[in-house]
Length: 301
Image 1 (cartoon, helix red, strand yellow):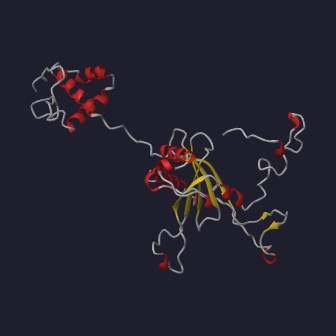
Image 2 (cartoon, one colour):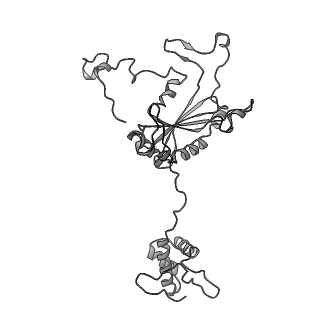
Image 3 (cartoon, rainbow, N blue to C red):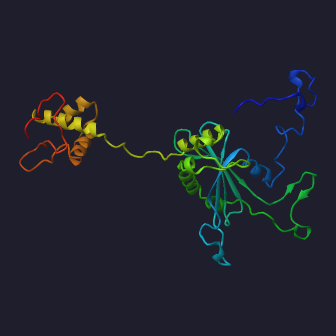
């Protein structure tokens, strides 16, 4: 994050020596938001210079809003905020999650620092248990309800009901989608734009989120046809030399013998080698195997 630049208007006494300069008490860098317990300021700040995507809405289960039953319970709400200026290494997006069965708003930061998309920071907000307003007055329950508890404690049961796995999975699917290139996006206070029409900070933020939210590839990568072609030719050359075939191929390709066995099986399955038949231990050339580049023919099966 770039270093802030201050002017004379930011200091209590701009003429003081450099090591004695003090920012004004009401400066945005030193104002204390910790007493704004409703967290309204912090939530509103998420909308600034952000690309916003609504992943889940409370009434997603009722496409026809005119037919919502009276006793219907709203579903969860998940909103993503891709900040145009990164928060730190691997930053992808902020998220807010709200649900009727949770007494808290869940705020988190998604990041990918080389091990896949995950939650790097997590905050739980009690949205309405009281706070100090701008005039120094405490805003809480009405006087007659003062003795009634106005907040639900964050217990272990509440923590278990926060579906972090679902939040990350839904966010990953949304952020990895690149439909914004054709359909465009809307940034608060700006007109809708798509592709190269986006402002450079917006473009960088979206491309960064797309890249870092791509699902990690699991398991071994698929075997290349060119590799299996080379394995088949090497197999046919070495098969006539008798026992120790897998060891010789392991030395040739610099791979362990179990890997060589897997490659041979894949070459058979893909048609570069024919399956072994009764009475013949070795496999023969498959229908997809072409003559080697040096013009020599594979040995007879």
